[in-house]
Image (cartoon, rainbow, N blue to C red):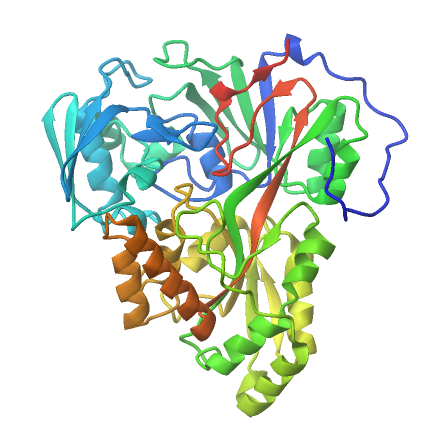
Length: 499
């Protein structure tokens, strides 16, 4: 693998390497995640450690191939009946892991469940344009949207189909602990705080997995994940940094796997609370953060500074919005204008899943321009809960990275900026109107115009600060064949051992 020019630093070479594991003889694939899943119910929490696991247990309405194109899964074909109606024709050979057939009734139930405000799925804002799901027969479903909805198919990439009969029988809590899907792998065991075990679905309708068993382990420490890969205790590990990727280049039994993703790193501010309700403070924060320094000096894995709350992998990327320049002196000037209120203590919410070097660097940058910022660390499940609360309860400051897995601006901008959304700390009639226009026109040019205007408003009002397009670095066994994708899906049945 050839690294881009500009990547510098000494390579830490291990004095001795564990003997390479004979991967081809292994029938168990071991994957080190950062945290254990916060949910195995696919309509529950939306975060990578959960998604990596449950996406292999469930089939989705549609999916994306390795080139990013939307392709059939549960729905084998579809046609638009009108501006607001799309008919989906379902496969007739899919069975759930308990042997019951997957039918249109299960699809309707899944849609109604994830769009039910009382169920309160964190994904609700990405599906709430669907106002009706109707089963025409066992293999035909018609979805009706509230007005034209161009993002329906990209969003349905994320809609996992759950078995109505199981969920209704056991309830949501038990279903989360023992999920039943129709995907290429079957849930076997969840040892809380340790690992989740899946086994191959021998009756799967599609491509079967190469591994009889897959084990997902919670390994919060990146150095430990790297050591597990080096020793052969793990076959695939997530969330490495560029220094660790360079180390992998020296290992005879492992390799780095790097992909530019649709995930956007951003800095969120609770604009409903003083002093963040003053645009001067929000602008000062934007000027105080050295985005180039973070990308080149800390990450150094091919990330790209962005001035928009999307990445080049999204529809809705315009590409001509310049990021805020790094100008700490101007930041200090704005803070001085605000006066005593600018000294209000503010907590910066974070979790171990995020790169703490970035969080600490941002805290230092904000402190150096005169703000009073303290890091508040919680586990990922708590961090997620704290993000999806009322404006009054929500953190003042948050560093985060967002991926909708839909590769459309609606999937990131709507939940983070639309008034009333559980992740949004912003309210603007003008922004709301543009968001609604972007998700309701079937004309791509009109949609791009709306998102272009949105990017300008975000830069003017600074409800959020876009930072960079994330590059995700995995480490894999040298014999593992797998192509990481921009939407960060980890499909076990698209992996295998080299010959």
